[in-house]
Image 1 (cartoon, one colour):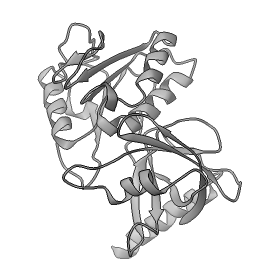
Image 2 (cartoon, rainbow, N blue to C red; image 1 turned 45 degrees about the vertical axis):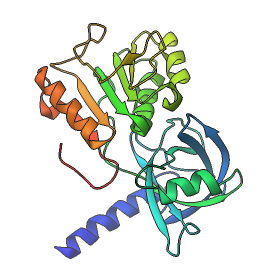
Image 3 (cartoon, rainbow, N blue to C red; image 1 turned 90 degrees about the vertical axis):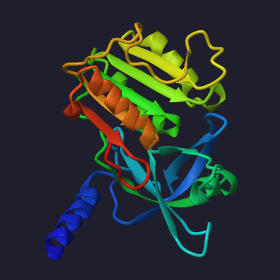
Image 4 (cartoon, rainbow, N blue to C red; image 1 turned 135 degrees about the vertical axis):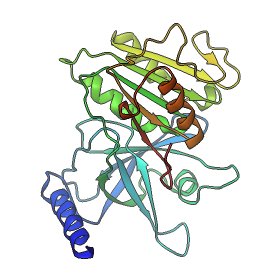
Length: 267
């Protein structure tokens, strides 16, 4: 059995290598930009130091960052790729963690990594991906869980032949912590198929913002209960609440996909 798993893993790595722009193991990248997206989230843009092509990823996938200087040991962390474009760079958007559990690598990226810094990356991976862009997809996130949803949304909208509706629902504490908000508002004005809703826990001064918990039965929200796909990303309690609320409305469990940041949990 062990040999079987080794063979599968070797096949996966070989596939990454032969794919245009793919590579095995670690590859050195340079930070070419660092952009604050909200009070807590900052985006990092990476290009390969060897100036060779990089592999396109599937919307929703992550990339692994290998850090050598944050502790006595090498540290690897996975961050969702947050921009879906066929260009020779990768972008991740990282939340600063300063609560009960400080984020060793996330905070290192915020505090120590600058434009011009060089970072080792491992090729994109992950099976939390957009399955069918032609369906009515509902992308639901909280906090930094917005990152894979944003790439899925971009992938749906960039195909001009695709007129399928897409509903984007996000929740966060307040407007100051709402990453990509302005970009989402701009997309909403351009694409009539996009339905954008957001909830704030506090200070919902924005006329369009709703307060409190997400309410999927809100009259402004039209959900594809019978035939849509629903994607969840955020804290586990948030996703558990969303999954059960959707199922109470008639959404089947097999229509719901989710990504857990951290050890896997069943919702």
